[in-house]
Picture (cartoon, rainbow, N blue to C red):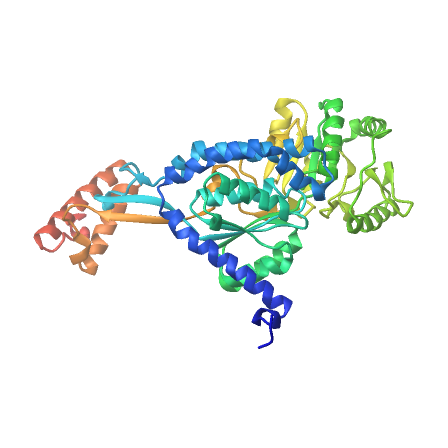
Length: 506
């Protein structure tokens, strides 16, 4: 063999990637068994230390995120670091209770199962693959990874484009807090790394990404029957009722447009405004946008905006802010006179673009909103009574009333979409429980097992008597069936034939 020659050099790039990823998955699986065996409270204690590490390394975490997101340190701190620390505290305070075995008492147990004790356990899945996005590379995969680890799993993170520094910074925090390095492994950013990790054998996938990406990942998971949580894109709606405070509406909509340069899945894209307030809202938004700073748009998104906005203008919409006439799109883009059938109102465009749709009433607004295949989040502006009433009718995973996006950062709140916005939940108690698999332990106490020695006729008689006693229509019928049930049980214990229900009823 020539000096310096290695079998690794003979492998194609794809083979090298698969080998690298397989090694990472194997390292995670090796570490997971010991981690899952640790007492639950010992696992949870790590997250108290992790909060302190995140606090002390906040500047480093911000720098790791800002390299690819063109954000100010203040925005990254409030949008990603603070919610991540809050999520740690939620886990520290609640995970032991939520993940503890739950015993079912006597209440509600069917009488014919007397003596059976039931316990529901939440056990780790094994190795969880977290596929992260590029727009929030620390918070979104971070919370998902922390919940998976708290539940006793190991995690491999496949970051989105530019997200590896943030994922590695999180892994460093976990190690500093006392976690085995094998429990959080960071993969390359390429799509092939995610595919290779599924091939290597993971036990669950949590994806934050677009609907097309979700379909591709699910297609790879289906033959392997690997479960998944899909947190996919949105084309979120805002509803402006007749009694809404328009100053609040304008401030909230502009905040949603500008947050992370519009690269937020919950940013408002479609605004359904009552007809008698539409012109007033248009004027207020146009005035508020005048003189505001420009934002950049990703090259691929900019090309798509040219197509979608140009098509909407041809179909009757009109621009009240921004421009698509030149080679560069001027954002934020706000269109009035839009209709829900326009393609612009059907896609998950990650850019600061807003379309105003005038509607007659709340019923028309709901019908128009439902024409979009995405159902991630929504916002309602109006009085407490009218807004709450409408919020209950909206088809969306989360609805915010009289604010924009920020309340969803509450670590107690689960998050997930419907339709093409995905399925399953992350965050909150529900998100933590999704990182587990359920095991039920059933134990029969005492010595009575009458069903083990009963013949078919005796079982049938017992079942008919029980149905009548437990579920009969009249009180008299239930009482009669109860005595027949007692007689059948006693006869079975003596080994005598059970009384014939037909003869007793004569």
